[in-house]
Image: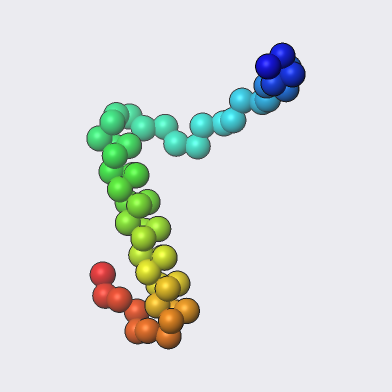
Length: 56
């Protein structure tokens, strides 16, 4: 455990990428990202299987 603590001492703080003014704004952004990722995965699967793209 001591070696783990020592290793953690070398970690650097990560910069904040997003700053939300409230929980609602955060939820909206996360939902948009979730929807976009799902659409991209659906498109990749359709392309791999040779299916026509799904309509959103």
